[in-house]
Image (cartoon, rainbow, N blue to C red; front, side):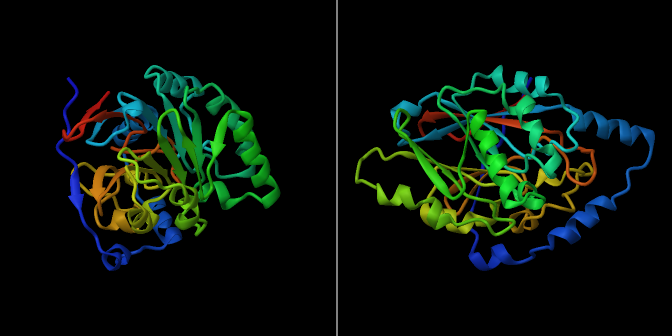
Length: 312
């Protein structure tokens, strides 16, 4: 039987404490690559964890949820890392489409090299959602692409029916929902004020304002998101540590929130409901240990109940 989650953690973190303990990106990845994986048993376990997708299913409750969003499901994919991914497109497609999501979002790090651009079609072309598909970029998406290839990359998303949101927002009037996309914080492409510009300029004093769904690859822009308000903030980037011994915290998270203990799952921080997706693919080492790949689903409800959660 799937287990019910405990209520979400609610914290208030100051800007100063958020920035304490920032680790260097390159140094952290060097540490990750130095972790030894010894023994056939551990390698077998790691191989299983690398290839077995878990579906994280959440029921989230909001007292003032627009009636148009009652029962609607958002599916989040993150950190595909197609350069080394061994999970088949068919497996991902089945895991997503079996839930019949109303909205699909992808929170960055889809590729790492210019040769991976053509891999988008088999993995993303077969995914569909009646209210749209939206994507933001991550640090690896920027790492080896010229400006010309980046344009091609974004056009390829559009040809597959995905809407890139790079410090931009789009209103879905049928759902009374803003989708707000923040460009990659890890490479300083983020501009939260610009991302919210359309939202703030269209503000009204309605008793039932639009729901604010915010997307970013990393949590490193959380303090600015909190200032602008979000009803649900979906991120990735950490891989949950990717390699984690049982009972131990991850050595590497590559975020300041991760250094403070927030590296996966659902939390409420500075009044922002935040989800940190552990992703599907791998970085540096093509294995996961004790942190299997995940696809997350969020079903929205009116009410005051604590979030419900099950893993399948």
